[in-house]
Length: 150
Image (tube, rainbow, N blue to C red; front, top):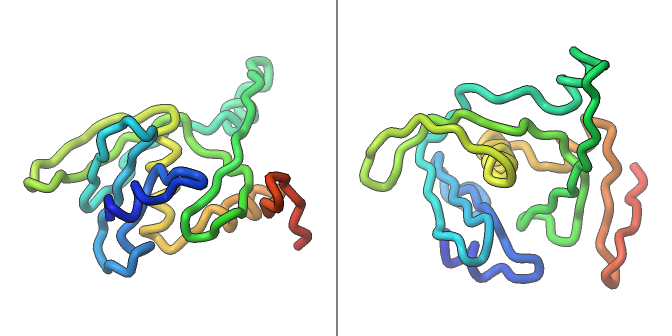
C-alpha cells in the first residue's frame, strides 16, 4: 500500500485505504506531506468528532467564522474534485502493526484525510459526500477545473 501511495505524484497521494487496492482489510495509511512518515491505522473507528463549521454556525449564528472549504480529490477517481464539509477534529481508536491500541485526537489536514479514508472503508467516495452536501463536482482538464453537470 505504501508503494502505491508514494508512487502517486500528479497530484501526490496523501492517504490510501486497503479496499482501494483490492485488499479486504480494515486498514488505511496516511502521509499528509511528501516528507511525512507514513502512518498506519488498523481496525480504525472514529469514536468522536468535533462539529463541522456549518453545524457550529447553525447552532450559534452570532459566532460565524469564514472558513474556505478546500476541494478534495481521490486516487480512485483521478482528476475529479469537489468540496466536502468535514469535522475539524476526530478522536480515533485504532491499532498499529504491532497490535498496540491507540485512542487519539487528530486535527487539521490529518483529520480530513482520516475521514476520507474511513469513508472508503465504509464504501463511500468523496463525490457522494460532496453531492449530499449540495457541492459542485469538477473535472480537471488542461490544468483548469470544469463543472460537471448532474
